[in-house]
Amino acid sequence: MATLVSVNVGMPKDVAWRGTTVRTGIWKQPVTGPVTVRRLNLDGDGQGDLAGHGGEQRAVLVYQLESYRHWQQYMKRDDFVHGQFGENFTVDGLADDEVCIGDRYGIGEAVFEVTQPRVTCYRVGLRLGEPQMAALLVSHHRPGFYMRVLTEGRVRAGDEIVKIASGPETMTVAEIDALLYLPGHPRQGLERALRIPALSPGWQTSFRALLADADGDSQSESGNSGLTITAPPPAWPGFRPQEIVGIEPESASIFSLTLASVDHEPLPAALPGQYLGIRLQPDPQGPPVIRNYSLSGRPGAETYRISVKQEPHGVASTYLRQHARVGDTLDVAAPRGTFLLKDADTPVLLLSAGVGATPVLAMLQALAAQRSPRRVWWLHAARDGANHPFAEETRTLLGRLPASRSFIFYSAPRDTDRPGVDYTSAGRLELERVRDLQPPQDADAYICGPETFMKDMTEALAACGLSASRIHIEIFGARSAITPGVVAGPAPAPHQPARVPGGRAGPSVSFTRSGLTTPWHPEYGTLLELAEACDVPVRWSCRTGVCHTCETALVTGSVGYSPEPVELPAEGSALICCSTPTADIGLDL
Image 1 (tube, rainbow, N blue to C red):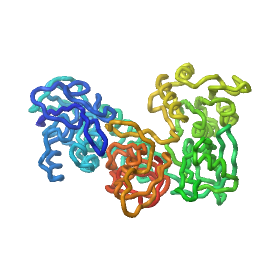
Image 2 (cartoon, rainbow, N blue to C red):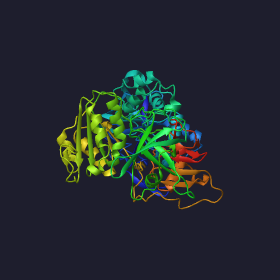
Image 3 (tube, rainbow, N blue to C red):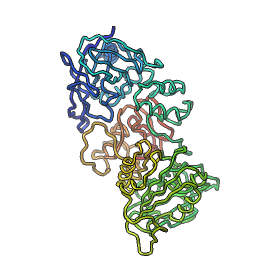
Image 4 (tube, rainbow, N blue to C red):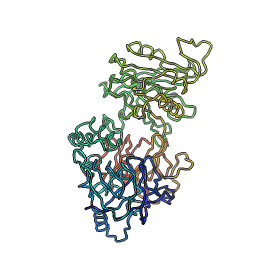
């Protein structure tokens, strides 16, 4: 008979970590006497990061004494106390390789159902003083698990744990954990997991993504689509020269460059929504400048077309405007990106402002080439007709689609701009205008433009009933950071590291979205730590090569891993939390 050995609770507190402050509830302490378990939590307990912990599906975290003994021996420690792993229930029994998702247990007055393994993050390592702990929990098949509360009630240390029902498919916690995090992802296992109603929605979403991907026989190339959005590997590594064969104005501030292979062979097909990395040398004495430009031409064409907005102080756009000529060559990285048009039969909403039209225009090109029967809505915001790129082109493309609608908004139309012809309405494209259009709730929406525009459109579509999974955005600049639990302060602009280690510098590291290049020194630790030292916005969770939150497109160069990640990222990408450069590299950060 399994037994509840200790009930542990703790409210979030601020903890100093790596020069920052982390808000975390990982410090749990045993309590005596009865504790009431409620639908979302135990009395006296809380989580610092509700995006990753807590909630109905993760109300109670369970860890086992047998795993305590395993880690004490492995880590050669004897100082563990109950709650050491952040668990609410320390139990004798209920091993991860025996308990199944969907199993139900009675403890004291309460009834529980097992919903998912623990999602490993850096904070369990923070509590234990072992930075690699998140990866160790997965690789040793000892994650622990969450339960939801079916019947609220009081529990206390010493209560017996009575199994009430077995979950369907009899897939253990350890098996489910390995199915997501470890290489392989066999189709049969994914299908079985998705037949378990009790499996939490987040894990179901991950397994559906893996199921929609390949069967797992080319994982080194495709990465783990259950943990991050993936794309096909780039058609070539690094940069290749391509010839400028056309330059066309698109609006007062936007111009297009058409690029062709220097050997006159067709270029590899790009997917609608992808972008190219362009490497320039505006200053012969300075480091190269790498910028990303979305492909705006027809996917599958023998050439690539990129469209560039002339920014008032843009180093790359100014250089291209002033110096690019037909016949010149540019160093070009292969098409990349995960802002991709889904192959489906649902309606499509394409929303853009200014030069943000470029990636969604490629999507419109693809739909028009197929003469797609899907309902396609084109919504674009511009200042006026002089600043409305691709106006004639989009009208022609929309005319090829049997179920298309177009809505053009000019915030300050000129006297010569024709309402009902050049634009639909005067004014900004705002929430109320989107709501009045009543977009279909089953549509997939693709949004690109200035940050405030994308934020407003995301909120507008959500208010119209579109689920978050149907709203996709493309960001030209640096992406927003994901630093779970870290107490955010003012975000400085990216800069060179404040401290430059002595000794010989290594390869150069370019953060392409941030416009920063800096030499590498081994003392920086990992590429993630270098980015943090430069205040480049980063995304991470486990910091040990498990969760793939930090997976970043590798525009050029190569990396080495220490430690090796649990599963390699997609080809052409790097897990920056556990890697260092082995050559000059460009990261899409």
